[in-house]
Length: 302
Ligand SMILES: CCCCCC/C=C/CC(=O)SCCNC(=O)CCNC(=O)[C@H](O)C(C)(C)COP(=O)(O)OP(=O)(O)OC[C@H]1O[C@@H](n2cnc3c(N)ncnc32)[C@H](O)[C@@H]1OP(=O)(O)O
Image (cartoon, rainbow, N blue to C red; front, side, top):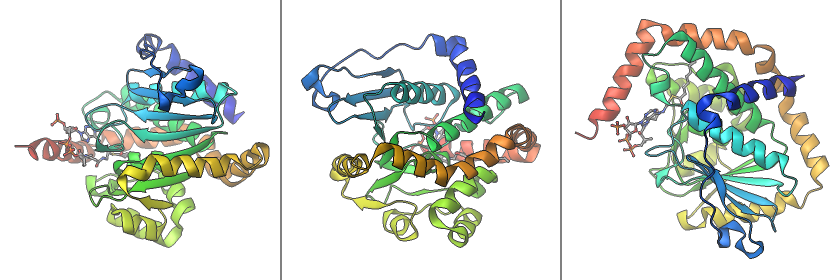
């Protein structure tokens, strides 16, 4: 039932004109692409997929410059790539990483949440929910190779993964910093964090909008491993090999057992959650906060 609802939303998304027009990235082969057996990179303008069929793994690189903000188009492309890989029996695992230097993802795209019509907020929030559900419940092993800063929605995306490897760079902070923007992390953002680091640590992290530098992120458990920057990908690969050595059906069922209750909560409250989001984001005070925050980001340069 849950899956059917999810598929309907994704199918609707795929039917949108800009999604239908998605081009497949020009194919290229290479070592990262498992060039040995000739399988090519594929993907879409904002998502590059480097398949390694021999290992049963694909590296999914987010490339929505400058900061991999999670726009509606980008989320849809991510979902399409995920679905393609899930439907291809060659693949058992995904390494999710960034192609934008120094940035994993800046989180939800603030321009999707500012100065738009309520109908747009509905469409956008559905895509955010769908992305979370599909990644959180994916049967594939999903490992985040976090090679940059990862606030808010960027952190949430990494929390949907089964394992997080973070590059040891003090600039690469990670956390749910929504309160600093004058907004509130929805219950399923909070639940995902609670499932990862526990209730008390989440309470503190979310109220204060903490963005953890690598050592702190490791200590509190937001990430599973911190490694030198040039070892993030290789570490993700060796962790993947360990996870793929486990009998797949047993691992998948265990993942579902652990995650389904959390996902079910959103699935049963999905429409109410959309209404809550739209009501909240349409408030004058929230729009003012978000505009001011975006302005501050822009002025930082000047
Ligand atoms: C019940 C209601 C529930 C509501 C819940 C809503 C939940 C929201 C969750 C979120 O994810 S909100 C987004 C939170 N994200 C952030 O706080 C990150 C903001 N960005 C930054 O801190 C920095 O940009 C960075 C990621 C550290 C990168 O810094 P850098 O110096 O490399 O780049 P900038 O010059 O700051 O940015 C370049 C460019 O990109 C624009 N931009 C940055 N972040 C976003 C974003 N999240 N959305 C849209 N646009 C973004 C920035 O404005 C610059 O634009 P310009 O036009 O080139 O000036």
